[in-house]
Length: 347
Ligand SMILES: NC(=O)c1ccc[n+]([C@@H]2O[C@H](COP(=O)([O-])OP(=O)(O)OC[C@H]3O[C@@H](n4cnc5c(N)ncnc54)[C@H](O)[C@@H]3O)[C@@H](O)[C@H]2O)c1
Ligand SMILES: CC(C)[C@H](C(=O)O)[C@@H](O)C(=O)O
Ligand SMILES: [Mg+2]
Image (cartoon, rainbow, N blue to C red; front, top):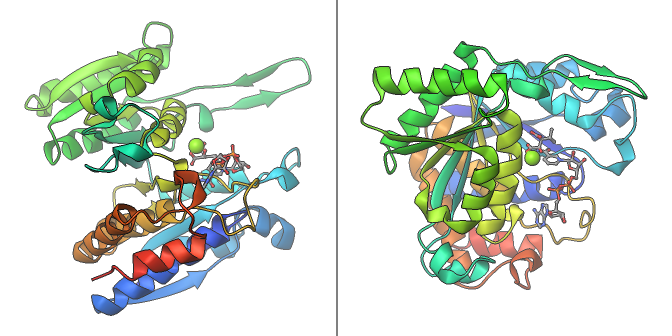
């Protein structure tokens, strides 16, 4: 069976880390006898420049027809302030694919605590999963934009909250059995709806899962103070965006952090959580691991190739254990040499 991947390199370091992920995918396809077919499409700033649209219809159709979508990153100073934004293409793509649950894992493997800026006692045993709601909230509300007044509406329905909460509770059952739901229910109406909807689902179907509510400002603190206390962290779109960048620092670099965005079917969108990193683009410095681990998540969640995903994750862990890495984690590798070190360990 040939699996069809819509491949969107995007902007800045996006093409660099996507190329690395593709090399690793090709290596694992070989060892695991997988047939992968890539269809590459213009997306983001590159698509604005060529087609006048960050999500051209050919790209959107190609993504909807694929088994999985892989994305590098979009955006950059060139398009900031323009009428068309690369980031708008990303939001429209997430909506079109219906990928409402964004999974962003953070872990620090035993022996790798030295990569974390935290003291070893705090970095030890960190292993949590942020489940971020991805197609609602302030990202998709009505906006008015003026010189003197601007407005961003935040809207959530009970159904939107319940479906992503279900993903979080189900994930917890396969992990350490704990969910912390993050909101700002002491101020926001959408957060009070969030809290009620998550409570109701927990009561009705997931009482076996240990469950708590944490206010978002306190969570920003606890993620640094006691990150090993958490298992699954469930939150809305904007809070999840912010907390997941914060979480990425715990393991050593945002360049290490992958993500999977899932909806009701098998097809997902897979992208590292970092952006186009204009400050390092073109210098061979980008850490490819976030993209490579996103490719592993793609194999596991969308392409029914869990063993190949394990092989990639083991190879990444092995290369890190050997002390390999780009400069963001204190290593001496380029993007290419780090990728080759990982490929050499694929079984
Ligand atoms: N999913 C996406 O496509 C996505 C995500 C976040 C930001 N963006 C866009 O990217 C652009 C730049 O945003 P930003 O600078 O705030 O965030 P960024 O994530 O691009 O960069 C933040 C910092 O992390 C570093 N960094 C990021 N990725 C790295 C990697 N793989 N290896 C080593 N270091 C890495 C950068 O050098 C920079 O210092 C903006 O246009 C933003 O909208 C896109
Ligand atoms: C580029 C931007 C729209 C995006 C987001 O805010 O979702 C990014 O920061 C991310 O985390 O994937
Ligand atoms: Mg972000």
